[in-house]
Image: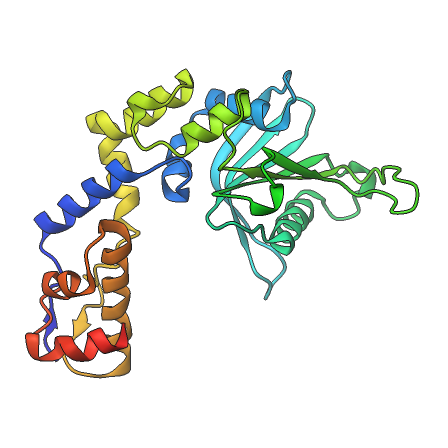
Length: 279
């Protein structure tokens, strides 16, 4: 059947630019661009989060793809770093208000499996930090962060496995470096960001022509425009599912109502009631 165009190029561009203006560092697609190719900023933020004031990064990359064993789930790290002492860091931002502890466990394990070479002794495993910055960590009970390490449950002695799992409360607003950083992470307006390094980077991605272009390219991937596969006219299940995905995307990212989204997607009026009932 004939394929239909979901949105015009001009409409897509306008939506993307609107979305870029709304981004915060707490949004993972923006966070990756904020730290991309900016090791000084990554080092600065990691120092605040971990409290390791002499932390010196020697390597930093975004969206590091860790391929695990054949048939197992792979992992893509938001921001990965290695410091001058060989310690490894994974920095993630997570929406929601409850941390997925087993997800942190899996990320930690994936970093280890990737590092250790055949026949290499387990003692070669480096110290590692897995850091999840949550939109709001309700279990923190107002604290800025929770640090988890392996301890002897009977004596409280450390186990010495070299792993640290840090859960940071993005809703924390204490009068300290961490509280100010979390406020900045949740601020879409670069002019209101207090941290100088972070402010300049966010300003570049939102106000500089090259930065906006970089951010717009990354944002395009979020919108399921349907331009490659199209939305087939008709009532087959695949087309319905794809159209509903587009509607939800527009409702969440632009704030349109379901009716407005259906109109923008040029869904025939005769079909709209059916899709509204599905939504």
